Amino acid sequence: MNTLITIVTKSGLLTEDLDYHVVRAAMVILFLFFGYQKWFAYEAQVLIPYISHGPLLAWLYPGFGIQGASWFLGVAEWVFGALLCAGFWNKKCGILGALGSCAAFIGTVTNVSSVTSEHPVPHSSLYAATKGVIDTLTLALAKELGPRNIRVNAVAPGHTETEGTRCIGLVGSEQARQRVAATPLGGRFGQPEDIAPVVVFLASDGTAWLTGECISSSGGAR
Image (cartoon, rainbow, N blue to C red; front, side, top):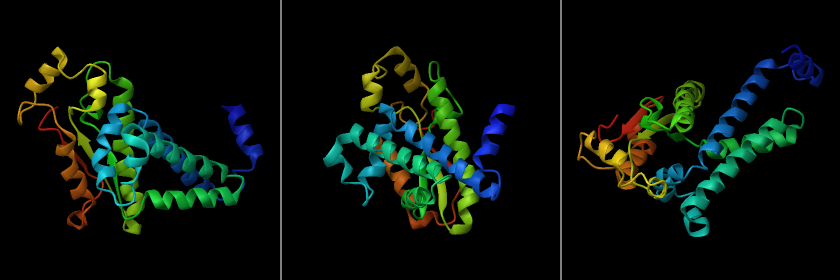
């Protein structure tokens, strides 16, 4: 720890504007986690309603496909985070990262969480942990960005039939049948089309007084 403190002190980061540097570091960590989750096949499927209904993002599917679009967004978020990090030493890089951040958070932010963040299933520890981070970030950003009239919410899909869940052999398995049996509404896996209306609703003017919320779209599954 002493070595770390010595390195940071010599870097000159603590000489002035400590609060400014702390906020910058928080944004770097935020984009690190946002970009990381885009590499999951499941995440690519959950993003379908976001990208399909996004006037600024709909072009991604014709150009990159479903998984490629998710990777593209993940790389973009990592680039924004890297530029913000470089801004500690180079203000021009910091400005570019800030501009990218503004583009990512225009008016409303709807994060993709999951019911596994609070109700994890076996062999999902890493995935559930990343979604728990998203839940906490949603609450924190809602308070930080609220004064700028930027709403931050999250949607938490339940067990959803996607290309990702099919590829890992979940759909049709005994584990899947158990999860379906435990889903009160409909007794089935969710579909991307079940998630899309919730995403659109959170981005609409009808939720102008809604922020810091995580809406479960899981058919009642826990």
